[in-house]
Image 1 (cartoon, one colour):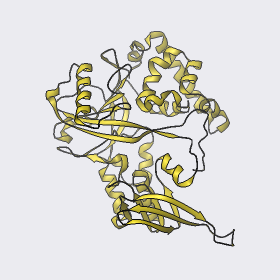
Image 2: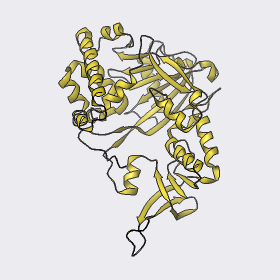
Image 3: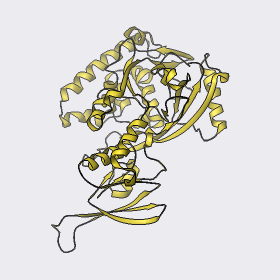
Image 4: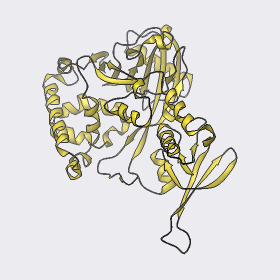
Length: 388
């Protein structure tokens, strides 16, 4: 039997692959339900994920490799914008980016030239790990300011970093630029190409659970210890593995053929003693259902002081009719709290101050979630062990 620690999408996919290969498995999930970050809220129609979930670049191909759900991904064009000085500025078309006041015309031209140079450099690496040092050894800020201008970094790159990493933006390795640029490759004047799993991620989770079998899943069960040892007196023997879990039935140890750790870096370090070199960043995600849209953009990134890091207006990508006519938008913030109704009221008051189109009276309901691993930070100069 194989043990899988973590019942999020990664853990469920790993368990399903093992099951399909003929192995017995046990999934140990510390919370009360599997699905992890793909868990959903109910609406008047389809369910919707608690935090924003979309596919870009080749993510759907990865999905197809493990499920038959790739054909259920609906691909649309989502408009992107920046919120600056009380105005939502579209930034998809070249002329929109050049007119964007956050950078100005001169730095807008420099940004375009910088992107072209970095894309060419990344393409030229072609798997050459030694050539990647220039990206991994510097922070994004150091890299961009050295190769472009301070205005390019502060006016355009830094807001995108903060929307993803919050206060840890200054620590992020320049290796992030590769993923950021790839996510922008499909951008055109009508927005970026983004995919969403029709009917929510619930269908994928249910299919994976059906493959694994509900009897092989243990919720409210946390892995607390992992032990590996060779047979006594025989150093060349096959290593034995055991995992100790704590759950509703108490603490028990199981011998297994192997363990898959589909967990946050902190849990991996606790169980294995390995230092991953990465840290997680938490974020609050508030889902608002309203009678009216907030903007005409799918994703709005804050470029100045605002009560949010980004707003993702889901129903500017998917029809409100799928959700009983409600317009749904996520408000994502790394610094704020959504622990109680007062926190959420303050957030809505902040939106009222930022968006003239917003009205408290149009809000149908508000639901909040805390994502403890919204992003993973690999600081500049830290080598992440590939053997993990």
